[in-house]
Image (cartoon, rainbow, N blue to C red; front, side, top):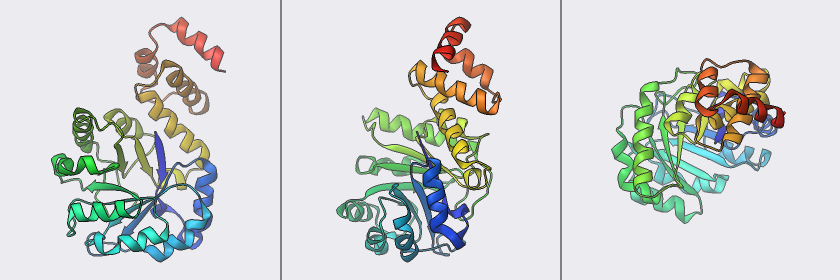
Length: 266
């Protein structure tokens, strides 16, 4: 369970400081959205900016290329310090060649799907990937509302990975992730949640990230101890979530056992 703050929501005038702030808050990855104004109707930043801010964190840089011809620029982003490069299955570049180029630079490759793109379009490439990113908003702008109708797509990709024994492939979701939506994403099988305004505009980003990770642990089939610990954190710090009673009932079959573990953990 990983949280990747989206730098699209940061203060660009102090991007390096914003990365440091997320690093100290406990972010797992830094998510950097590169847009060319052609593939999506917005322009953000390119490899020179990523290279300039690389020194502000040792966390993995998860570079999401929303550009028409990603193959042409893989070397630039590799040289800038990308650890993960995801690009769209809908792009103009040859998919196999682009994946091979990313791997040749020692970087983890991933494919991205827009909301209207079906899950099966990534299936021919799964064995070559480390990551599949499912967009839960239309790509191009931050601050949009989460699209719950993308969760069946996540489940379909997860099932196909499991059917092939590709259990190391991570599923990432990007768009509209926050306190009210992260549980849906995690329950569907998402391993990495990209969060923008929900962490950058939080009064306490560290608590926000810890909350999100705890919700993900609760909604995943981990050990009971991990889930109870996460549940206790959420309950103590933030009060009941809308589904808190359901979570408690679902994962702890007897109230006495829950109370005993609660005392042990606290």
